[in-house]
Image 1: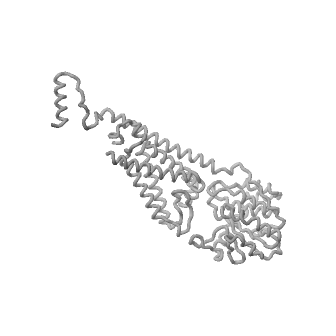
Image 2: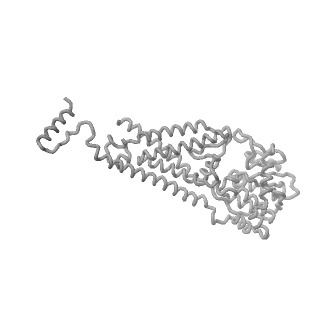
Image 3: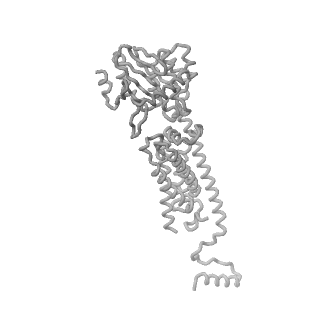
Length: 160
Length: 273
């Protein structure tokens, strides 16, 4: 249905914007990303550096691929995995009584107890999860490389 | 009568007549999806594989780029900053006391060589403090603490630099060493300066004593610094309200058992007047 394709397109571009913004902020300050990952206090020291270095670029790549609409279902599925990991990381920090900023859109690290905002951070990620979930279930959108490359008409593309 | 029925009849007629079947002029359902479906699926698999490769490349490339970038201090020499201190600097335990014995005001400065707020404290007030030290109006006790010891990658720069500064005090070159480390402060989350570079800085600011190298490399005062830090962070008068939470942080400036509000830019003038 054409209308659902339109909704899907908005969802795709919305999630693309989220990844591009969050990733670009982190890429701009990679040392801060290290401090943010460290604050979650879950990963061994040797892995913190790898995660802090890899995640920002993964986010930018996910955003860029969603923007052009290439491999939308695969990208959305990876997004789900990453977002679930984020929610789990924030939830464990909350459960253990750590006082950190999630560093979701830059920043991150230790903050005072009054500055923590776990419910909002998790709710926001769940919202993004809904966007990603839509695209996993229904990756067909307008103005996508997927549609152009598979050469299928709007009627058949993306249907599996 | 429906289109489907009509075309079915046409097909039958065509078959009877032995002519090739011509498809109906395309009413509703898509024209023969059967042959295009496998090709479409193959394309999707290829696209999926390409996307996975692109994501992996972004992650690997990002890690390589980040590691290259955060190791900016590697192979560099710590630039020397001179203070021209004409006053003594003496180490006792994990504390270095700077200034003339005759000065009656003693200021305690608690800081960490990796802490950006400490750097801006030094940038803002370092000059004034050196002036007062030179005039002999104040003495300063520097407490270099490993508050952010895990915030360098690899961890440990806060401790290494604190220890090295104590070694530099033993060697009689504390003021320049201290100033140089703040001026050349590495970023949090990045590689700090290693012991080799700290030793080199010592030599460059004028350390001649042969013990300096082994003092830095063996972490001679690590235990003393750790013990002093454990003590300091529990001192009740040093706890401050920061963003609604009480705790010890760096930099903290105290005179006697009172924390000085360095947000007031005339704090030092008021102290010496």
